[in-house]
Length: 379
Image 1 (cartoon, rainbow, N blue to C red):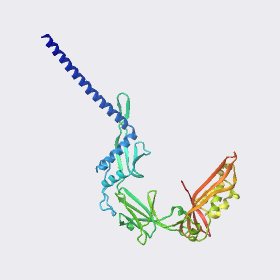
Image 2: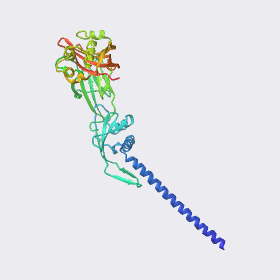
Image 3: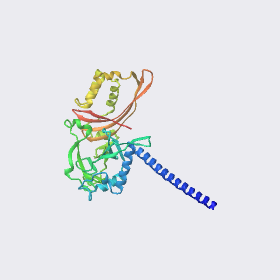
């Protein structure tokens, strides 16, 4: 009888131990879940983690056709799409584009980009601060507002093409109501009132929800190649060659840009002889009142030119000279790429190679070719 009672007591002990152990395991599991959630919440309390997570969630929503959870979808109609749909457009966008964000001047506002295209701005509520585990303090970010930029569709495109070309979006010819202006060629914009220069038709097409198929054709219906620069499309057939003789055949008079380029290089290092550091050697090939003229005059008349490093020019001053990439806009205007290396020795004996690599833009004005713009070539 005593032995049975002892066995019974031991069974009660074991049962209690098992129950206690199970309770400990449950509490441990609860604690582990709580700690895990706390750590995840702490991670999201970092704004970069929060924004990356938000973008990932937007991508998932777009894939499922639920992007309206984040963006208000307005009704968009386009003459160049059969079935415009922002929902499908966002699905394509989040699948094919690189989605990123940038902080704005407003500390709580972030712009969201698809490649280089701004698609939305997110304003966060950062007023709620959480404390957990006695150690973790973080911001519990919430979305305060999302502003989407889709009222005119997801794509608004600019085209600069010759007036004889025809533009097609998704095989539909672009109508004249999309023609905004006859645009000047930017590099010659200062001198259109002085010289007869070509213009380009500027079309603006909006209300597109899908990435469009762009086709440009010439007067004979042949497809024309185009380039995309800074988000705009450009198409022209300006004559281009590396052959100076062929280029000169298209112009009013022959002109060698290399002597001026050498003089300009010498002028910048205070090595060009003549009054005002050689300014008047250059002015016959400049047009008074233009930015190039003002730039040259300012350099020649202000104190900065006197602070150029003391040096001497080497006997073989210019080496590796190259003139290439002639573009003929019409008989009055051309651009050309010039590369040269100017060899100098500094006062401490150190050799220095001063490189000029620019595109020079010339117009024929008042009996001479004159420089109106320069653009540095970055390699």
